[in-house]
Length: 239
Image (tube, rainbow, N blue to C red; front, side):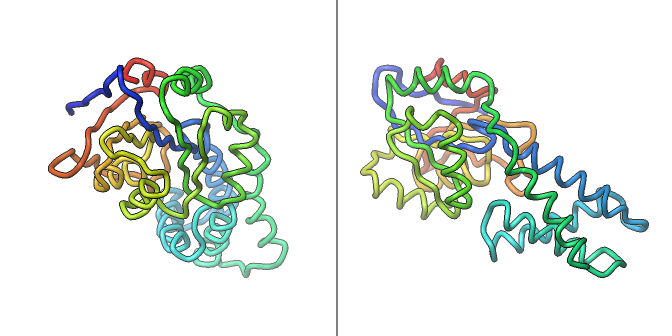
């Protein structure tokens, strides 16, 4: 895949994702899911089949409840109700929701190379943190991360799609050909940004949430440039 670097000599606007781009996130959900599947201990469904049911429930729940721990907890409870032969008692309900809420207890784990790279980029370009999810949860992680000072603004959105990117462009008066969305999700960070006429930087993460998987779009007429990296720290080589 061809990747087109930015112009080193001009100021760019970098919209930067947070979860699994700046700090670890999905690994904690994967651990909670593994614990839930072990607890369920289904005698007919394999762990993979249980996970497929959970994925289907999460797709529906995101539309109803958005992203975040409460939505995830709802999905675990609903999956239990679908698959378990046991009735959902108040005690079981509390135990299952506990799998989700243990995630909130983890400190923010910054991905290697991120602080130094942000420090470098902030001196050269305009950085806006753009993340989707529950507003309180996401802003809390931003505050605890120690990275907020690198950004000119923090934008928490309910979803990332071409329309939302257009709204952010209008809100901040951005110029599309020098604006880049940087993130690990083809579905949320790369493809809709390209569709909105922005540039994109794909920084893959080996634990990206399965519901964020999607084939990378190819830049075409009306869409911007695509840069594909292996690590966040490589942004310093292109910007």
